[in-house]
Length: 92
Image 1 (tube, rainbow, N blue to C red):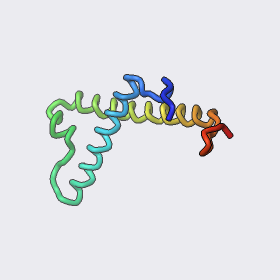
Image 2 (image 1 turned 60 degrees about the vertical axis):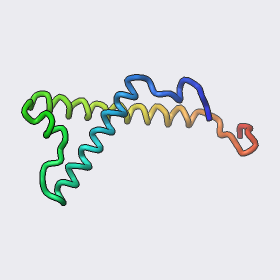
Image 3 (image 1 turned 45 degrees about the vertical axis):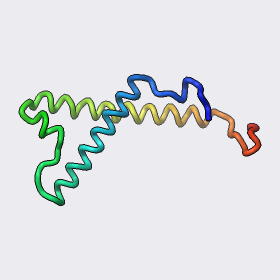
Image 4 (image 1 turned 90 degrees about the horizontal axis):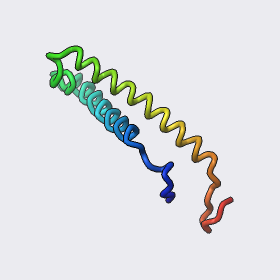
């Protein structure tokens, strides 16, 4: 496993990952609520009385999703440029 600095997430990338995870879990709960009834939208439950803040959170989660697409694309391109390491530990 490589320990180069390119394999580590920056602080912004970690924040984006956390926001995307929160958004994904929230959407999962929203979908679950359709089956069990009720409102399981945590963002709405916590910030529903402040529509502007709620909208800002959704916007940040969306931007974080776009940032993670950029991170994944950059990492994929970087890995495609690296030589493939065989079982013997040598580059092919």
